[in-house]
Length: 324
Image (cartoon, rainbow, N blue to C red; front, side, top):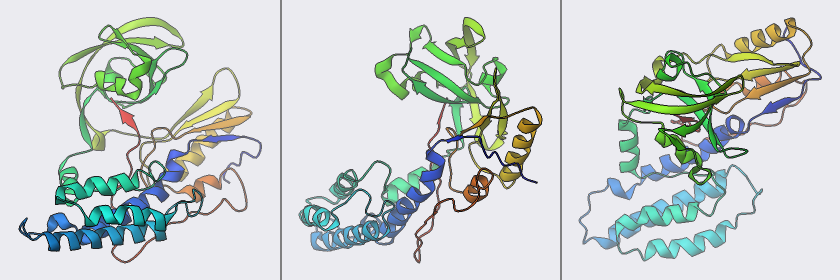
């Protein structure tokens, strides 16, 4: 029998629950725009009329998709007709085809953050040629916190990574990098000071809740995400009866089963007054949301809505986590 935590409040991060819907709009807009992407044509530059006509068709199709498939519906009260009337003349009067992407992005900037995304054909090709599953750094998922002291929190340490081999653990805090303190005005950009070329050292000033501050030398390496084990992990917040589940970066076929087993193990250890579901490093679209929510309540769990049209597919997951 699946455990049900009837009286256990769940704290669920919003990113994994919302991004699946947001990326539908992103992918639809991008795919449709690619279908008539002016950058894919080979007209000479002097054929301005043909280029302008293609740009207008691209803009009109993109605007229609946004209006018809906008993930927030009427929530933010977007004046679609007014938006089109302001930006379409700009497209008509563009002097250079290279200005078209900037005009489109200016329009998208008027929508709520992350509501839509558009890429040119060249940008998409360049991104697909890059390997997002590999990078050089220490191998940890992190977050920036500015209070009470600016610091970089290690949310999760990848097994076998340089950070793991150096003894760094989840919830450790980096307060200085190579002797320079993490500054409030840097914000999340402070993470870039930890990253760097493989085989090069970085000195981190680390604070832990159960240890004094210390300096840790980490030899950066090349991290291949596809080779890193990323299981769901769980435990209890000590002292107390609050359980904690850290969800992995990407979902797996066994995620619901793993969640059930983790909850059963927590319940076997004594009373559980609450559960924290940590989704801060979770990303991607293939999450079994309804089965997971059903572990904590009965009845309706809200609606999960996606928009699919012919020729429109979701091809790429959102990558919201930071890593070092």
